[in-house]
Image (cartoon, rainbow, N blue to C red):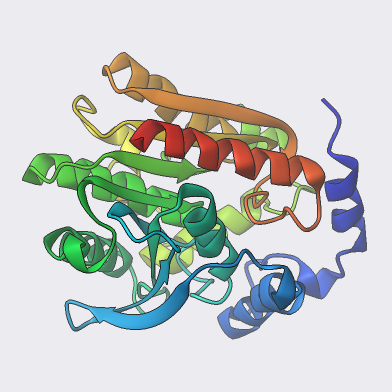
Length: 315
């Protein structure tokens, strides 16, 4: 279907300095632009209301922000990992994501401030994400209080981290109620039509994907050494040998996203492995729509579908 008109207007109005980073862009400038779009570009008064928001440090090393609903009984706990290509993003840029999950699910959301590249390359983000998940699991009574409803989730690069954490949790015997994967990167080295079809003009470009991978992994995308990372399931979760037994999954992709096809492929692979999957490709939308409800009614409807599907999955 055609590109959502509200998203199209947003893309037309972006100044060159507002777009995601090109290969030569300095990391600090790219981070500042994302904050300008996600923090400065929103009305704080329009954010979903939650009971409390507090800061903490998990396992003494990983900063996080905890969002609590008004419920007084035990509720689910969502360990949330923000997007940003493992290079951009922080607790502020994804504050609305966490608030909306807290409000829609009536759940405690632990928004994790994992280390970013290029200062801290792979596997620092993976290690921080899993440290956060396991610490929350051990102390779940301090968070949502319901050990049977622990969720790991994220968007974009955070969804990739969530998928990796879900695989490791299963291997370690840590039972999760669900995993939430919103337009994840699942197969860095794969060849997918969506990377060519949506490689320019839809907010996230294929060149930018390469830039993010290079910052994260410390090798150029064209370097033969990148192929080794491409087969590592801690970078490309679709490359895992066995996906059976993983947590039930909500997985969302966008029609005009270069990551669309590999996200769809991961949903299909999970289903073939016997995992329960709630998967939907949102036509007319672009990468980053989760959190664009203030820009597009269609993005808001997509966000509502994702969160409702997750709530239904965990009960």
